[in-house]
Length: 135
Image 1: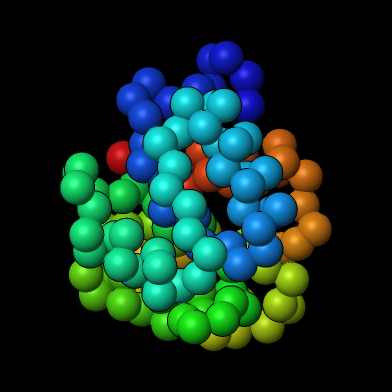
Image 2: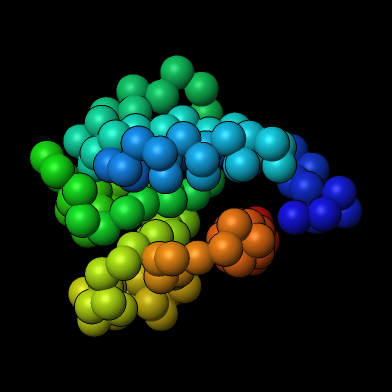
């Protein structure tokens, strides 16, 4: 992301990724780009963070699909029930994720998928475009 594409205000991103090194890397890169990031090790932690957020709402849920305790699909369903305006971006090595997105989410452009492995610039572009669609 270049200087000119940094967010004007710090968008809030809820990151759910069970791989600690991946989660740390993504979180640091997003914070470096000006995003406000809350990172969690699984879907249950992320859902708790969502409903107990001391600050305002989250703009984006950035979630792995396959995680312990609560997977990304269940997390997304619960999160969208709690906050229907939330945008979702799946980061996954699971090739079948496109087939499990709900038709209403696809129609409303609420969820996107970026396959692993990905380059950080690709992720940043996808996040930026997803957030622009939401605003």
